Amino acid sequence: MSRPRVKLPKKAAAGEIITIKTLVNHKMESGQRKDKEGNTIPRLIINSFQCNFNGTPVFSCEIEPAVSANPFMEFTAKVPESGEFEFIWKDDNGDVLSTKKKITVA
Image 1 (cartoon, rainbow, N blue to C red):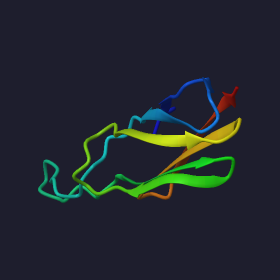
Image 2 (cartoon, rainbow, N blue to C red):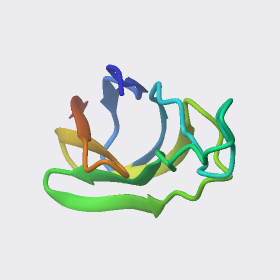
Image 3 (cartoon, rainbow, N blue to C red):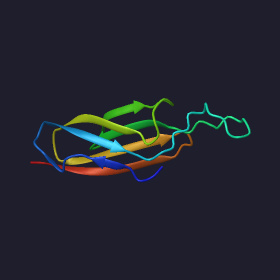
């Protein structure tokens, strides 16, 4: 996995619902294809995603092999106060990728 891209406003009003967009590069091998020798290529997908705000979960999902490579997520969250969003992706190999973004409530 490579460095994720996350887009959210830098500022919001208290109680505002904001849109958050994420994109992460990952080949997402489904486990259903075969290599040149006819052997099954092992499944390797991002299998879970979670977003926390100031340590509290605000969005999470389990991901199945039907998701395309480089999965894009878009969701909304209500922002009660200034703080930090944490985004966490996990894949079948146990690799974890995370990043954080701050938001200021005015």
